[in-house]
Length: 103
Image 1 (cartoon, rainbow, N blue to C red):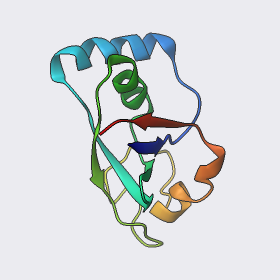
Image 2: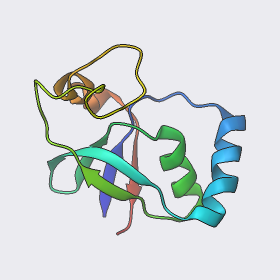
Image 3: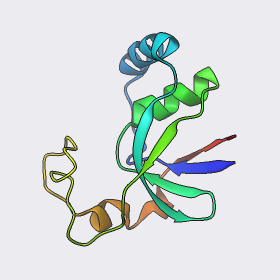
């Protein structure tokens, strides 16, 4: 089992439907995430893709990103309006929704 914490709790149902349609043919998503401990991961992207994977019974492939005070979202090419460090994106994860996947 692995628990993946989402970047945020909100989502757009219409967009989720579109993501699910694509995922039905493309398969499980690859998501960049920080490994916290044991089976716990914090996703840095892909809230809709993770929700779609859960609904479709797919297990995402997690690409590990190092927890860092110097590496930023822009360094990774993540689509954020501000250039947060990875530590800023991860810290406070316990207040966010998570999804449990069987691996």
